[in-house]
Amino acid sequence: MAYKFQFGQAILSGNLDQEGDVLIKDQSGNTKIALDDNGAISGSGAFHAVGPASFGAALATTGSISSGAGVSAGGAISTATSIDGSGDLTMGTITMTGFSVDADGDTIVKTLATPDDGTIGSATNADLLTLAAAAVTVKANSDFTVAKAGGLNLADGAVTSTAAELNLVDGSSAACSLSVGTYRSCRQRFC
Image (cartoon, rainbow, N blue to C red; front, side, top):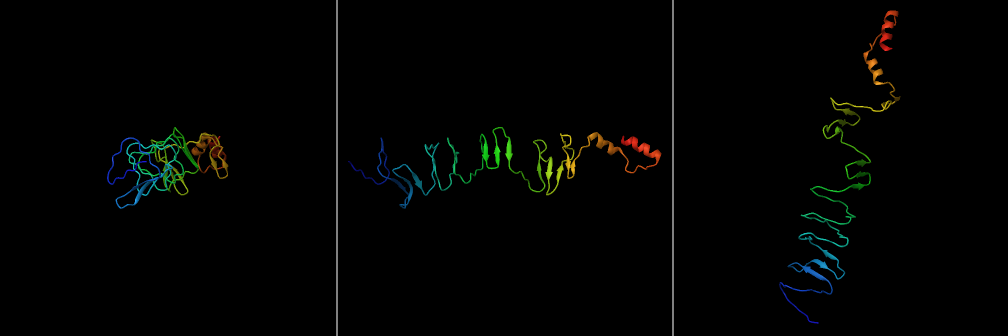
């Protein structure tokens, strides 16, 4: 077997077969990247890939992965403790314990909470409801509809009056006397 030895830059052509580990050192002689003979790459510095990088197996790291051009994976990104970014997250669906968003935006959450005086609304009326510490306020000039008859409940039971019946109460007087003449006029107002 021929041995070759060279200091400085070397330009190689053709195939290069290496037995044993490959160590890449900085100018001070500190190992920055190690490629062992089982194919594992480790290092103490940043890993930079120019252009797309593809990994046939899992990419494991104890540090962070940062990319100026994006991270692309054909399989799952698993065992991540946090994923931080400043751009968009584009996914088909998002699923985690207590929270899911499907492909067309339907969202299920275990708990939805706002800060005191936080708001909930629609695309055209973002502050339709205001949630205070112990009160819900419907925005002025907005409607609140209970679609089910008997669907409005107070602490002592369901309100069973219809809107027409409640409107009759609205048209009555607060003090009807019980004399025969006025009783008849009050009765006509309520019947």
